[in-house]
Every structure is written in C-alpha cells, then in structure tokens.
Amino acid sequence: MTTLTVLGVLTGAALAGCGGTSPAPSPPPPPTPGASAPAAPEKPPTMAPGPAGRTPVFERRPSGGGAAGRAAEKVVALTFDADMTADQGPRAASGERFDNPELVALLRRLKVPSTVFMTGRWAEEYPAQAKTIGTDPMFEIANHSYSHYAFSSPCYGLPVVGEAAMAREVERAFSAFRKAGARNVVPYFRFPGGCYDDTALRALAPANVTAVQWDVVSGDAFATDADAVAEQVLDGVRPGSLVVMHCTRSAAPATEAAVRRIVPELRERGYRFVKVSELMEDRSSGVLRK
Image (cartoon, rainbow, N blue to C red; front, side, top):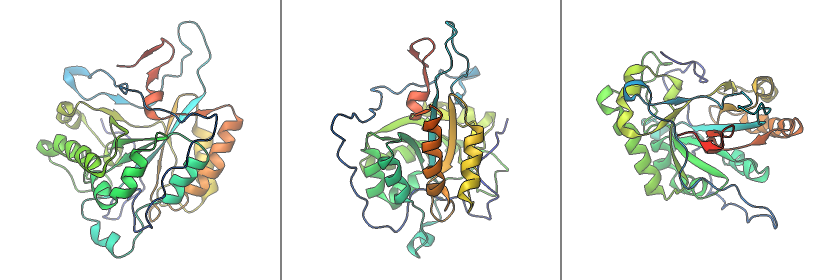
C-alpha cells in the first residue's frame, strides 16, 4: 500500500524545507491584548496501533456529523513540510535557500496555527529557526525523518532507508529537535514523499508515532503560479481536511503568495485553522482520538 505524494518528480535531490542561509529569525511577536495564542495539548492525541501493531495512519478528520447529526465542524489544518536531505549541506552552504522565513512570519501575522513536519537534518542546519518555530505556541513540530530518504521504493528518486534503520531515522530527528531547543514537538510522523508500505508501518511501530498524511495536495512543490496552488487548495478543502504544503523557498517558491490568498478565502467560507493535534481530536464524541 503506497500512498499518493504531493512531491513533484524529483531530479535526484529531495524537496527541501524550512531552512536556509537567512538572517537570524525574529522572535514571535507578543500576543495581541485580549487574544490567546493556540496552546498545544498537554498530551497530543494519537491513534491506536493498527493491525498487528502497525503504525496507524491519519489522513483527515472524518467528515460525518457525529451521532447527534451535527454538521461537520469547518476546520482545516495547513501543514508545511520542512524537507532537507542528509546530503544537501553543500547546497545550503553555497547559498541555496532551503527556508522560507517570510512564510513563517506571514502565518504568525495571519494567526494561522500550523504544523511543521521537519527533518532532523534541517533542524541541525538551522537550529535557530527550529527553536523559534518550536517554542512559538502558534506552531507544533512533527517528525519528517532525519534524512528525508524514502521508506519504500520507488519514491520519486529518493535514496531508500533500510528497514532496520527506519525507527532510528525517527528517533534521530526527535533528538535533533530537542538539541535545537524546540519544545512544541508532537508524536506525529510524515513519510518522505508520502511513500510507505506495510513493511514501513511495521518497522516504525517501536517509535510510537502516528503517521500523518493528507487529503488535499496543494501542488506547491516546484510551482511558480501561486494562484494555481491556491485554487487547488480552495477546490479541495472540506470540513476536517488536512493540506500538505511546503516552506521551501528554492523548491516551493509560490507558497507564501498562495497562502496570502488561501487563508482569507477559507475564513470567508467559515473555516477555522487548527494544528494537526487539534484536528486529530474526535469532536463528535468529545474525546481525543487515541
């Protein structure tokens, strides 16, 4: 079982994420008087293991209205992949921008709670940015592996992680987040390229994570037409949707402009933006999805 992926056809190098040779990141702005920042749950919700202990997979909140027949809550989670492969350090050193701090600043200004799926390699390359994202209650950091290598093959030309090393990839990324000083870290994992199979789900079981995919592909990878990206998201979002995007200037240059359109238009439709940890809550029953 291999899922669809948001990534475009890669030409030997993985899509990079929220890192780059940028100036030191600005600290998050002080809260607006009278407004409360979205707080991460004390214990983020997770899903129960799948058959034979396999890692569970979450794609979106179920769209049903619940036993009482209530309409589905109009919430949507925008997620941003911070992709950087283990071998892209020389490209970053030569000036390639694997970050998009302007996008992160925009999300703060627009007060859009978001989940950043970050690779450990990126956190090592840009620890100051990882810390500011991971200590801002507007955001939560989830795991996108250490190296951004594939967990099943074929997967868009990505190098492949051996089965024995898969759980270690996840553990190594979490360690990188802790070393950078990130605190708002949740036990969620996104497969590089969105590629996985039963072998990967079994191999990741010891990591005790919930795999998080998506139901709306933004198409922002390598896109240059921000309106086309925005239209794809706006056409696809439904109550409970989970959108995959990227915060990579070199490989997703149109994302910031697309978000400038997506956020106000979805709010006009009555949508509220949430992090994955909130989307995973089972609001129909009033309990967390465990």
